[in-house]
Every structure is written in C-alpha cells, then in structure tokens.
Image: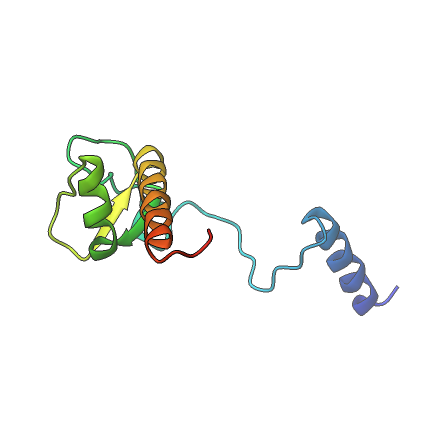
Length: 109
C-alpha cells in the first residue's frame, strides 16, 4: 500500500469514530487552554448564588425580566453569567412577557 492510501484509510476510520462528522481543526482538549469565561468556571451573577455559570448574556437584556422574578444581578460589567437554575427562570419569564406582548398586540402566539 502506498502512503496516500494509508492516510485515506486512517481518515475514514477517524470519521467513523467521530460519528460520521468530520472536524477540520479538531484538536484534543488538553485541559490547559480554554476560551471564554463560562468554560473557565465563572460563578453565577445572581446575588446569593455560588454555582458555576452555564450561559453568558447581555446584562441590559436580562435586568428587567430578572427583576420581575425578584432576582438581582450583581457586578458592574456588560455581561451577566447565569447558572442553569437561574437561566431556566429567565427563560420562563421571557416567554411570559413575550406572550403578554403578543396578546397586547392582538396577534396569535
């Protein structure tokens, strides 16, 4: 077998291992270099919560809906980091306000 045919067989085998998905710039996670604060383990921005964040959102977009639920965002930056529990509460509140807005405009939801 030639060198090119071996490389081709190896790449086909690797694609099968990845579930048929071909990742162009796939590099194994070495546990050293992480992009983004959420992956690094920043805590939740809600006052009184110490869990790790799972989402990062603009503080301007979530301040009003979270205040309606009785939660307060701590910190001074432009981003708010939410854990799974508080992100779920935010989604419920946003869905509720969107539904009310559509009813106010007399549009079906």
